Length: 115
Image (cartoon, rainbow, N blue to C red; front, side, top):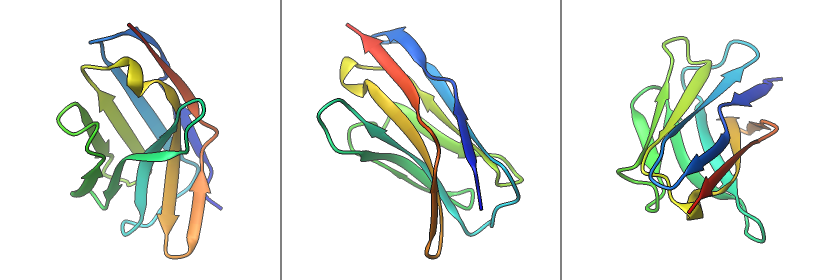
């Protein structure tokens, strides 16, 4: 079982930056997909960004050009660099791991962007 631990959330003013990190508890497959999803109050959880391997990356349209996802060489940790943050980026950010039919979620980290 892959356990995920997130860190790096917090409060920031609009236009600022934050960097989130998510580490897996054990070795993970290089073919796995790890990513970030967020949940705002009253809204469904939505995709932010994912990475498969090191180079296959997917971003939601709302964060393209502002957020960058990356992954360490041992596949176990991912980062989300968030720049030019907007109040609508506020929410709980969850780390996700997927490999074939297996899926795991982190506990979430709060990101609040003030206007």
